Length: 237
Image (cartoon, rainbow, N blue to C red; front, side, top):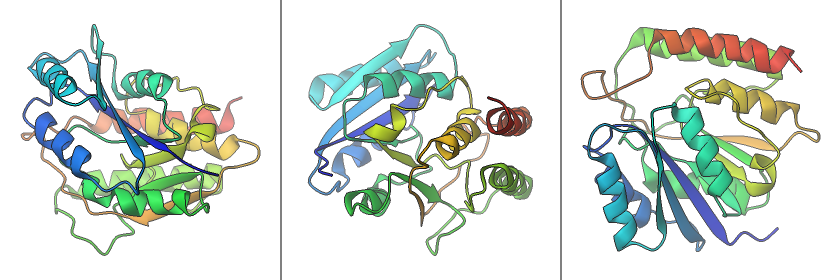
């Protein structure tokens, strides 16, 4: 299969401090000769994120700024972005600086080589650098990944990763329901249920996590919701 365009969907909520730097890195990333489409989906930010996104879109024809009138959550922003993405490959990129767009070649390679339909970037399968932060956050991630694996019969190491890449044929077959961080277990479960099951690869990535003071948003309540989503979307219809 021939791929021509990469759509990079950037959900954004109150990321004025990092958005312009992140988009600069996205625009500079090597993407194997593909055309680039960047969709910044602002989810009702209360800071200057919308103004920054619109300014970037005016400068670069490859960038589109999409705005939600009120905050709904990361899953809702991705649902909007996926619906408007036109690329043959769709990649999820958070608007902070925790994940490095310089690693796009590693994420894209299994798909461009014709070996994969979906690629997850794993923070726990990597020989690269990783900022040391919260023990219990890391343990919670591993517990959720284990629970997901038990029900999907997959051996992922990082189900909660931001970096998820899909061929258009795969993502158009999945309907996202979750509005917040439940997107991660939902998309994983629904991919596992597709018939035939897409070929899924994991590649190691670096991770420069941030603290809650620096703007990290996910908390323990999202972990509880994620566990409920693992049960709902794997065991439900």
